[in-house]
Image 1 (tube, rainbow, N blue to C red):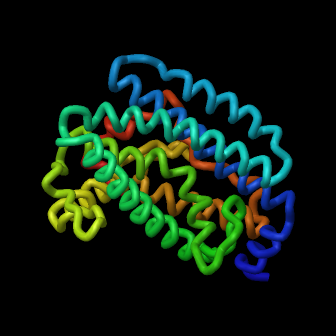
Image 2: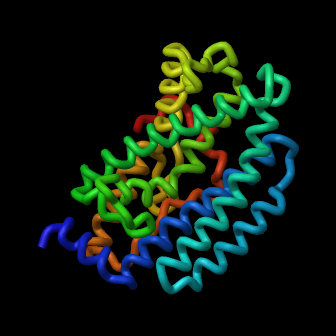
Length: 264
């Protein structure tokens, strides 16, 4: 039986399907907390706030979830709390920089969509290389020829990559208001801004981070590939569990300390 056939079988098994969904959401929530704490410390030295505490409480509830519906509900609630907190962080980054709040909000939407599209492409490629079917997911189950498994695995990396790139670009002010244009009611980046963002995203993928399971230093791009392979091994029943990619609080900012000479 091929790994894709075993993936389909796991998808139809409520217990195994819930386990994968639970692991992906666990990684997402832990990384949300780590990044919120990191961003807050960078701003004023604080240790986090109500949003972090609320998400940590949801992590406890997640451990007791027994079905995919409960996991999805916890995921939705935690995402709402995180989005509100992250919006405040983004608001601080653009205050006094853009000519209007509307312009800043529209620019953030465009950049956020671009971050997620670029991350989706990276994750989908890794999933295909691992021999899995991107259209058979566990947390996001409805496909309609969409890479829902990529969305599952993306959850673990969204705060670490997509959100962090967006905030970094805004904090460094390397994309200015004049580079975000509105044509026929559609807000978009001009070619210069798109290139700038692509470069920033690629730099993030090359950041060196200590892998939480294996201890070695490698790039975020390689970490995505490793997680896809770990998921493939779990679905192929070669390993008993799938462990999500979770950056510990004490290690959340260490990739900033890695030297550029370290190789992927």
